[in-house]
Length: 337
Image 1 (cartoon, helix red, strand yellow):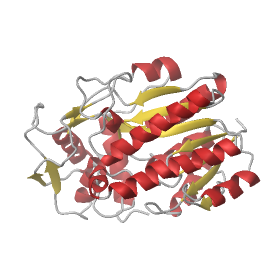
Image 2 (cartoon, helix red, strand yellow):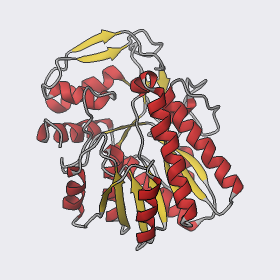
Image 3 (cartoon, rainbow, N blue to C red):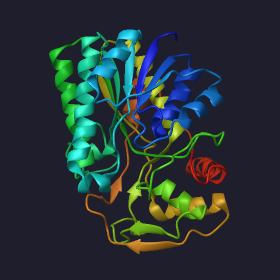
Image 4 (cartoon, rainbow, N blue to C red):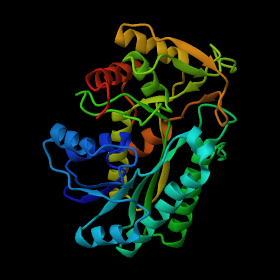
């Protein structure tokens, strides 16, 4: 591939790993990020892993004039839109911040892409758009209803994208609903580096294992699951990144929009994830049970059949590989980037 892609949120956790896969697949990448929750060193690490240069611009997707200037200079064929805030608990406390970043940011980006004649987009959505699912595994045609502002922000953008492709059939949009990304690049150079106390399970466990945090808070042990803790579908971040390359290939091959889940199709409890991590790091992870968090649900895992059919993609890496890679990243980079 010699086409040039705009990647928003490129120095974030999923964005950075996807940039590696895109570059290795032969795409040219123009990376932007406002660095509100990530480090510019990520871009250096991407270049180190791939041996390719990545032009990087510190731009907020809400900055219409900066986006317009950039797209006037570059011949962009498609965009992958990662930029956004992603903490469920923070969104409950700061809903306006989440709607401004995630919804207004997406509208501004879409406006500029539209003006520049760019009509191919891969959108980073989330399994939170399914709310509290009536049955699992969750299929793409399940009813949609978010239980928190983060999920609602993703759902609003999905609806905007749907309306946009109805209004202008030239648009080809891949909406990817992620389940729970975990792990890191096998080199140990790239991984998840949350600011403050992590909101997601794997980086939280990893920071306890490396001694940054005293214990893991387990939010709720009275769910109707095998061990009382929440069940989630953890997917290796490199499998997830590869899903974006497959989605992009389909957008270039077929004139249609689509929505798919990216998950493994298997549920893992919090305590199972802790046990796997203990195995990887060779030490005990102390836990403390805390009350359930508002907006959390008991069980959430994907049906991954549609991605297999449409994209010829499936998650291949195991829980053990996820925790091994996550631990390698964390132990090599105890303070992140």
